Image (spheres, rainbow, N blue to C red):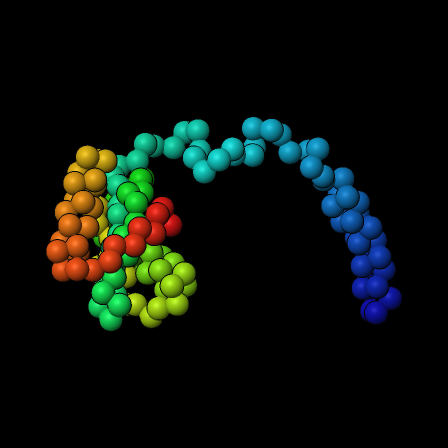
Length: 136
């Protein structure tokens, strides 16, 4: 029995290795590799998200630039908020919480700029320093 199993391994192993050696970068068609982050047949963004979180101890407000999203809703806001809070915590060595309520969804750039500007003004009235994180 052992000899039969060993023989089968010896027979199939070189065939598998030969197939793996034949596949290489030359076999990939140029159309198979997507250029950039956007697929050619992808739908346009449905909304924009911008996020903000406040550090009460340091009297600072961290705010992001508006980012287009293809699928809106509470799950997209929650995921983006968690990522935003993680980025802010990592960059500024903080332990902020509340990522599920950090992001705001708006239908277009005009609404995003107005809402974000209103949040910045409210923070400045409270004498908080506004730190723009950018597009995280």
